[in-house]
Image 1 (cartoon, rainbow, N blue to C red):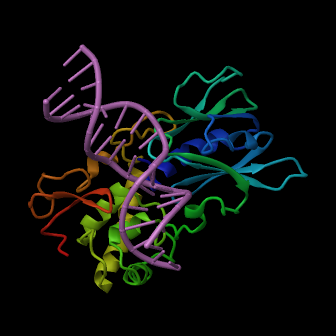
Image 2 (cartoon, rainbow, N blue to C red; image 1 turned 135 degrees about the vertical axis):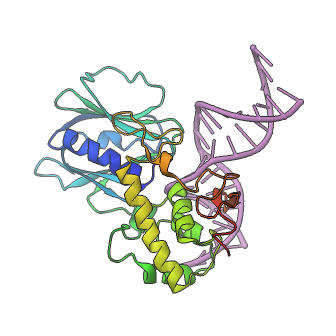
Image 3 (spheres, rainbow, N blue to C red; image 1 turned 90 degrees about the vertical axis):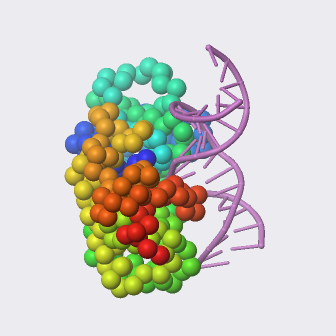
Length: 275
DNA sequence: GTGATAACCTGCTCGC
DNA sequence: TGCGAGCAGGTTATCA
């Protein structure tokens, strides 16, 4: 499941391969989630950026057009890759959801088995069609995200801290894997509804830590995630909590507990992470 | 504005 | 071997 580290890994791989190329044509799978794809045709790619889990490809059209952005969310199973010498053949991949033909003969392909991903072409910076992106919280490394800001956000609401981390509002880019890891490291119970100053400071720090390490390890591959080269990440070998229900806690030895929090599979240590 | 819930979607696993 | 049920989960829509 692509979260911030996985999207950042893909971004870093795609940037040098796409910058300066011109999208000559676009194809989309017939679903409203992807039908924006052909709208990128005719534009030069001037940047490959990221906000939270969204990939933002800057498009610079002819002089009479305003700058636009191709927004791609990988959803659960989305993969982006650059295919050599695509030509103009019809898509031969049953799970291909969008393809952008480039002026050098290559193509940028978006493959997404479960169709949880999404593609949009919007005027640069105008995200009103993408509510989550429009309301996205600060990046984890933004000074605006710290213990006090996280505590203020959580304590002003009645929802579980894990649910709020996944909402993308207090901080951008956290998904189920890194939420469990950050909460375990900070020794905060996922169903806490309030944070002390110390807990909030720890949690803000561990959110940054686990995401930084995730990027350094090329992302986490549990089942579907592959980078732009089709390779698996390595961060799954460094997980302390997520998916380890029934196994001993790396900190205290207690058996980790697997449960469900707001419909999300959740693992935590009942000893280290007391409510 | 906030919170709760269902729907989307399909490969995989498990039990029968 | 084949079938059906349940599960995985990020985002969006809907309702209270």
